[in-house]
Structure formats: structure tokens, C-alpha cells
Image (cartoon, rainbow, N blue to C red; front, side, top):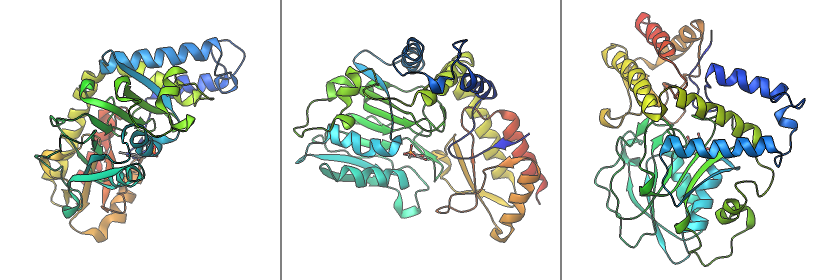
Length: 351
Ligand code: PLP
């Protein structure tokens, strides 16, 4: 057995992969692979409708919000959110909690002013800034709820006085969220949903149409709302696998079920790190991510030795990102407790 701890593209539930493989061969007795079917067919329309409905149900999305499945990844959303919400002459607030926040800031600057209201760059992003002050004039504040590279996560989303735009690429569907706080939530599929290709966007309709610039069709949320995400050919297969994951989440207790599962896994792993004489965690304890667990060796020269012990035990994907070094275990929704136990076992026998 291989235990997949990669940060993304990442682990998918076994039953999701089996159903996806079946659909890749033949979708529901149609004689066609899902990859061969029109995005306007009755079958794909049903997939789109169920994916939207299940997203609404699992995240308890109120009226006035629309659910879209777009292309371009979270990286396109860095620009698209600002293009749709930040008029030139206005200044949006951004919280800088790591590499992905920095990229969001860079793209937003193409559209208007950016005020970096808080940053944890002084300590290589190993914590989440507290008491963040956002000017009331900001059209929105942008946050990255989970910092995939640095292993930090907002445990609670602060109460801001302005709407929030959030990159939830690496913790969407891992816990309940109060959608009414947000103007836009976005997430690439390839961590907690499915294969790369689809990007989930949840947008408050009332926030749109306020910028004065003319929007290119492919970057205008309103057009995708009007066309139920399919203004052009959408990433159907990625959306379908995301739908299979959403069904799996529902079957496993919804996002509340995911909280229990993720808390148990994260506690087990952080406890092993804290109690081990050779390893230590990099993120501030109160800001530790339940999705990406970053840790280092007191003797860095033994890193390759640990990675090869992992490989011998079927564990892949635990090499840390170059900006932190050491190790990173990504324990997204689909990772089960047995996988984390296997990693802990290897750590314990590594003395
Ligand atoms: N935001 C976060 C928090 C991420 O972890 C990633 C990818 O790892 C991205 C954005 C970029 O996503 P994409 O590759 O879909 O553009």
C-alpha cells in the first residue's frame, strides 16, 4: 500500500478513484466515456446540478450566493477576484500569510490599490497575524485560510467589518464555514476535491457589477453565473470527480464528520512530533494547520535517511517545501487514520 502525503495534487478516497475509473471507461451505460461526452448533454447537466446542490448543502450556503466551477486554478482567482471586486482608485486589504497570499497580492495590484494590513513574513510565515485592523473603506479583505506551504491555518476567521475574499484551496470542505461573511470563496480542486482542472468559486451575487472597468468574458463571474458555469467547455471530468468526493464527504458525516476525522489525525501527528526527541514542528502551536503538518529534524543531515525510511514503509510525498525544508505531511480529508498511524510508526522507530 502507498500512503500519499503530497500537498497537491493530493490523495483521493479509494471509492472515488474506483468510480472515476469506471466513468473514464464508460459513464452509466451510455456506451461513452464521460471524457467523450458533450458538456451540454443531459448526463453532464445532471452532474453539474448535483455538484452545485451538494456544495450548497455541505457548506450551508445561503440564498444570494452562486456556486461556480471554473478553470484556471486558484491562481487565476488571485486576479479574477480583484478584477471583479476591486475598482481602480479603491484599495483592498490583504493579509500576507505566505507564498500564495503574496501571489494574490501581486495580481490584485494590477487592478487597484492593495494595503497589506498584516503579515507574518518576519518569522518565515510560521504564524497567523492576530488583531488584524482593516480600514472600513476597503471593498474587501483577502485571506488565505490555510497556508499549504507553511502549515498554518486560521483556526477561527476573525470578524472583519468588511466582506472577506478567501483562498480556501487547501482546507475547503475540511470544516464548517459561515459563508455569509464572504464575498468570494475560491479553491482549486486538487487538494480536498478532485483532480486539477476545476476551481470552485462561491460568490455573493450582490457584490458583482460594482467595478467600472469592462470585464473580458472569460473573467466575468456574471457571465458564468448566467451560463451555470458552462459559458465555454468546462472541466467536466474534474467536476465529476469532485462530485464523487462531495458524495463521499456527505456519506462520512459532512464537513462536521471531516472535522472529527481531521482533528484526530492532526492530534496524533502533532503529538508524535512534540514527543519525539529528534523532530520539532515549525508552525506556532495555536496556528497549526490540520491539513499540512510541517516538521524538521534537529539533525538536518539525517533528512534523507528519514525520507528513505518513509519510502520503505510506503509513505510518499513528505519532503518539505523548499521554503521551509524538512518534512510536510499533507493530511487532507481523504487521508485516513491508518495512513497517519503508519507515518507515526516510522517516526517512532527513527531514533
Ligand atoms: N492557493 C493555495 C492555498 C494553494 O495551496 C495553491 C496550490 O497549491 C494555490 C493557491 C494555487 O492553486 P492552483 O495551482 O490551482 O492555481
